Length: 121
Image (cartoon, rainbow, N blue to C red):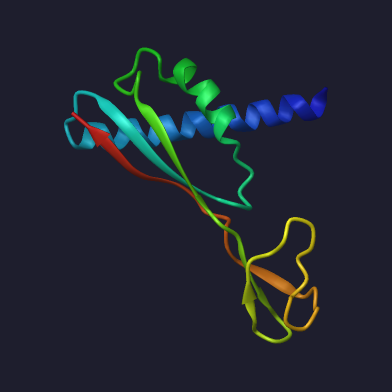
């Protein structure tokens, strides 16, 4: 039960951050309403689209972003082998380098999480 609560709180805080960022930028542009928010999420980021969508209407209610549509772009993960320098997309289970079988790898893409753009009126 405690793990579920932490996941719920994490997604709620993430959704609130998306709202705060969007409203701040919309106000700087003298916008009357936020219509769309484009969000980039890497494969390795621990963000669940459906959970963010679930909380969106709750946190955005009463704000200029109420009713805005969230759009998610997923960035695939990429790793680089420290042993041989090969760059690859990892499989579902193994992060082993397909070129040399080393497990000494680092994430070079896929941890992204950002509000990429907002559309306003």
